[in-house]
View 1 (cartoon, rainbow, N blue to C red):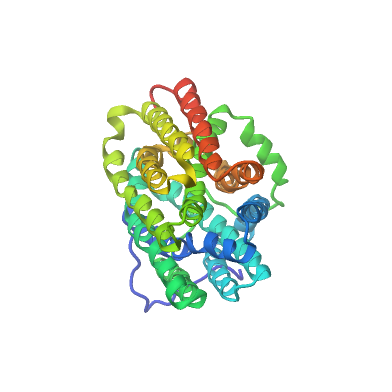
View 2: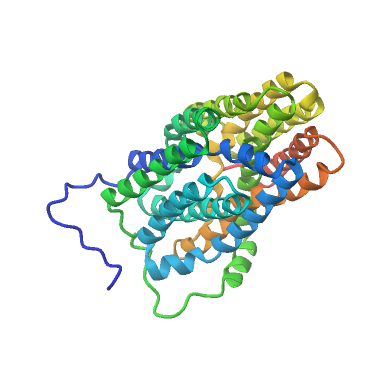
Length: 399
């Protein structure tokens, strides 16, 4: 068949898929995405000249990503995972090219390519992990993967802003695009194959709305999605509004990039939580992490742009406190999903990332029409406290 790739016999043997292989692949992806994570909201603010318009721009791209995510199972079943993953890497490369033009149409096109590319990469990588990692190693796998990715999330955001402010948009996006090209090359060197649970169907895939209903009919999957959505909302808000807080508070663009890099540096603690999560349990860790983070965010919102140093310190504390949910947050989904529904359910589950940008941005866009940027963090703090209550009340004690 057209997409059944045969690799030349002279290629060196690829590493066996495992925890370190997936961690390495994720690290390269991290550099491609994180290099412009803080540049993008700053460029959007430079072009759109309004915090509210920036929020609505992110809302539009999140809508696009959500719609595209539901089509990913169809793409996987017709193109196979390796081609969908490849499309994701190429989309990141195309996004970097669009951003370089420094125009409003290029900004929107690049944002859409970036989020759809991330959707392809996230869904397919999750499916590879479900195929090749044992159930008892899920927590260790996620903690090692995020721990490896910490290097990218620490170095790349600040370096991206530095290139943007010192040498212009072209330098920042050339750096990001180079990592996207490397991701494409590394993935094809690894030559990952679809697992035994994957079979190409003889009939057309089901209507996407049908497996959305199937997902939401399962309480364990709904709860897993809520936990992931709360965590994603926290990080997406931090990436966009922490730099804006520094700019509107008079601290400058470099301070925004530095704040995000320092917040990402907290991810190194995920290795500690991954190794010791079993002592506390997913339920206790999730509830405590969400609750403590919510309290810190409420305080950060209270001080707002009037006291950016205090607000920035509280945001850093919030990022440290949310890390336990990164270590254990995907475990409820991994344990709940049925093998024969992995592609469809993973695509729906992955919508937490899109809605983690979409729904909060809609709320923030309205709030910013009446109050300052501190209102963003107050709203997020209230959301995470609600997630803490849901985790404590509904997650199984044995999980």
